[in-house]
Image 1: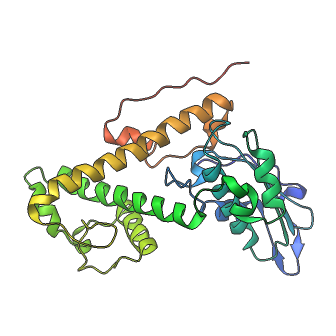
Image 2: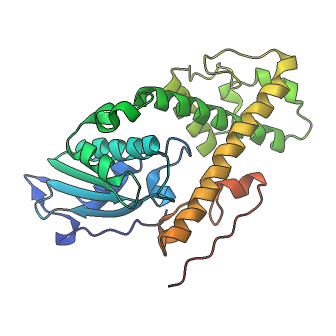
Length: 275
């Protein structure tokens, strides 16, 4: 993974008793924060603009950036709020400042974060749904995409495997690797079983499909996955266009390629803006 550009102050470390907080601690915490729609860490998407650890290592200031100024405010708030929570959980950190730069609702979001007002307290009458419902929606989509990646991998590995047979594939039948690990995490988030005997192809409630319904279920899952990968590909390109040099902060699922490239989508080439 490429490094996030940081401004750490005092070389990013200072003693807190016997505990030292560094910019790497902050970056690792932020790696657990996902873009809700793209289902990728904000560190790998290049959304972390800067990290600064105070001289006494009790204060952390982080600035986030997004591909456009009009990215969905609820998505933006969720990522900023999750970032603040993740950093606050680092032992020794006492004060956290997270600010979203260059967004049309930056002032509102940053004020809400600073006051710990919460989502509804920040947006008030504009808050349509709770963040919990938003999280559930995108957890379901993330699970569907992860499930499709694993099953499509089996089809590519065995060209003679009928699609109808995918309904009987168990978790133990999946090869070990990043995609299986991702699927298991998504199942855990939804409360679905993760034992080896559990069927892979299930709906959001864990229900399986009859053989005749499997191809349609797989096509719908593939549509969800392509949408997520395509949006991620597009957002990466927009970020590189908006912020010169931000491509250095982006990491990909496969060396030298973006997630969308791995699944046959048309490539999107974006040139860096030259001043």
